[in-house]
Length: 466
Ligand SMILES: Cc1cc2nc3c(=O)[nH]c(=O)nc-3n(C[C@H](O)[C@H](O)[C@H](O)COP(=O)(O)OP(=O)(O)OC[C@H]3O[C@@H](n4cnc5c(N)ncnc54)[C@H](O)[C@@H]3O)c2cc1C
Image (cartoon, rainbow, N blue to C red):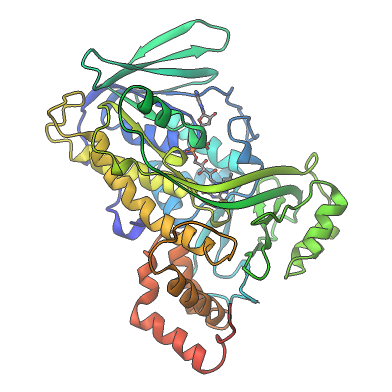
């Protein structure tokens, strides 16, 4: 499911179901989850092992924070629903609003996409700024408290051994502390320990699917004239596994990220970084790097080995009082920029789960299972994104594993569509509405879209093989 197929957030729909919920991890998934839980619990505590900075600086627990982060439309809309005026605050803190139809120079599949006919807003900021604005909004929600420098160590099971009713944490330099809660949420990202914990405690652990993509990111920040909103994306392709992006961010900077898949590694020394930029299909990023002053300390680097999905929705028996969300459920090849938006859509699904809480007994083994219902709904979000992302990764011949059904045919069609979008701006916007997680991938198969692609094929504008 994508933004257009999930009902929007409505706080009026949720009644109080419990006294205290705890969320582990104050990154994007943890914070959006805490926001929806605040409608259903009198108190929500978010615990985070890092010290949380006052300003927009990267932190140890979110090492990807040095690199380009795009907030797709599904994330933008959901954050604006959860935190009214989110966009205005982001812009007030230095974020930048660009039009993805015209300001974004998008090179893919042998050419640059034509400008689109409708405005598509895209908020640009560093990842720490996105996170900082969400955190300051969350901190002002009634009943929410955020405890940093506080490390989660274990869940606590009740006497029935069927429900989690709290957790132990350790504050920096302090002793172990027990916190009771009717609901605990694991939002600790890819390093989540919950599958191992479930296994150790005699529950099933979720089946895992892992598809290697071996992506590497290297990033610098450079100076930008205030009114220059140009944004670039050079997408890697099976014939050229190198790519990059330049995104305008706060403090009059562009963040320039170079990436490569299946073993292509952008270097972290200046000369190597420039040479890599020069090897891209579009010369713009290299030109930008040569002409503008570099302002970051060194070149940040991040390897990302694989798409990974834990199928919690496949489980039949899970403990009451515990759910998992965000990257801890599924994390995707970051080139498609989906993680924060998927976390936001999962929070929206949790909101709808809580809205249905007629007679939910949070810790009653005989009652509805809030975790199972949430996992079903979250699984519907992950299904579409997984098929889109992993499906696209299967366009690279090096990608191994079980590809989603129909992938090859769909990839061939999308490849034609992208070529047609190089001269047809309407197709660009249709494509964007899917990759921005607004519309489901099937929307690209509507007759009006297929006709435009076929027309381009017949007129010879979209006939090159991928
Ligand atoms: C290189 C790269 C680029 C990306 N680009 C994009 C992009 O363009 N757009 C996009 O939407 N997404 C992008 N993503 C994905 C995005 O960063 C994540 O999906 C997003 O941060 C949501 O993750 P999360 O909150 O589930 O987990 P994380 O961001 O990993 O956060 C987990 C949190 O849990 C805390 N924690 C962990 N263990 C404990 C513990 N024991 N006790 C207390 N706290 C703990 C950590 O300190 C951290 O704060 C990118 C990812 C990578 C790697």
